[in-house]
Length: 388
Image 1: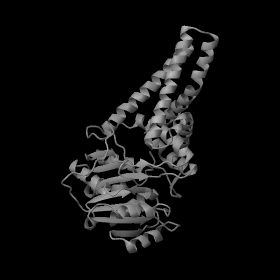
Image 2: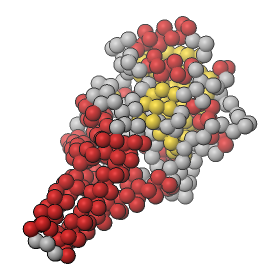
Image 3: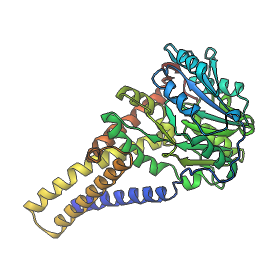
Image 4: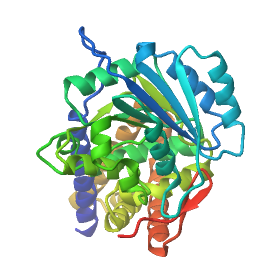
């Protein structure tokens, strides 16, 4: 009976997680092309950049190719004391740009600020647009992005619109970990509640944040979240607390990003924010336990139940084998589907147990950093965690 109970528990957990993910996907709305009667308020696009010589040129080229009225658009790059060629690349682009492109040289980081938030804050102070659009330097926008985003924000009266770019995955570890991460995040963030003003739930993706300028100023902007490692989610919560409309939409057809190019970058980047992503230390530890349990059960239970059924045929042992095999097959099929959605070889779906184990290690690492009070860094600049 014990093997059958374990198999039933495993299958039940998988069914629950899959059902939750399906419900979440049903509420996943995406950005659509602009309406027939577009409105073009003045728009400031703000790019915080620290040591981004590999990305800033392509990011800036994509922004200067936007189908947004030139006279209504300004692009501001905040060079946060880069030690590479970031500023030189921007200056060269400015010399040939047909759009209004400005370079702001960042001031030294004051005590008590996270580096990215301080760079964004300086950019906002220099901006003149009625809308402020914060984008990361590792993003690349398709020409219709800003028109569609601003039109959606105006039509739906959003105070903050955050978009989810398509994630370009190049390395082995990205392709192993991200599918598992996508499945996990579907359990954590209730999209229906996030996009509803009736609930306080709030989350945002800092790779694209579009504010009405008056809303940004009223909630205190990045100054109000200066100590937060996950400033995007903190800003989203502030907007909702003040009664503003928050919209989080998929935008895979409008913008893409390559977040990490090495295992070290991935480990540091996700470790910095994982606790915030899953809403606390307890949830991070629960996620780690569930991930390891799923990985172990998916590999071990079908084989153990198969051996038991061969040597001791009987209803309960065969039923245990069928339950465990169905649960493992369901997880396999789900992750192969996620791999296909992410446009990576579906063979990476076979490696989902490895992704779960590594994800659990990331969760524990993030918890350790938080409990130890270890400072994290933005682009190599250490800063302290927000005290809670």
